[in-house]
Length: 165
Image (cartoon, rainbow, N blue to C red; front, side):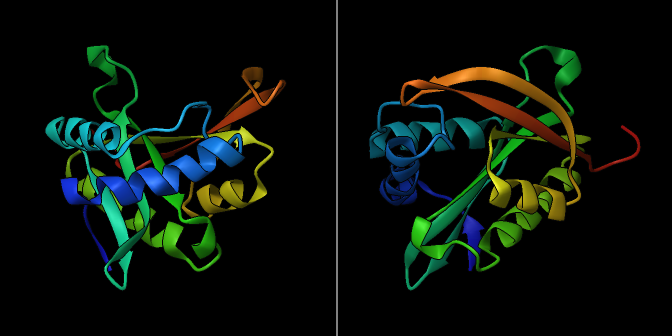
């Protein structure tokens, strides 16, 4: 089941995210986040009018996706950055696609024109997900993140949801 996230999901979301902070370069954060930190993030996204959704199995959050403003300047108001995270135990089951489909539908209904996704590279699974969602690679920045004592590249993919404003 996919539904809108609420504050009670924050601890489970933090657990999912902290796995990636501690064990991968998928997130460039280096310190784990608390449930309270995640609660504030969820509230901030939702208060800005953007979606944050969760995938739930057996009453447990097993994945989530959300969108944030791409940049603060007014002219960027029709562009967002979207992210999806899954419990590492639930990968490869189509949850990422279902979460992104839900987010993209919501964003399109809200008049968002462009969705952007950033991916720490290499990450073939995330690249495949973004391209399956109709996103196209538009940028590659070399050695822009430094984590686990080495440099990492980041690529950006985008998709236009609407043809007009």
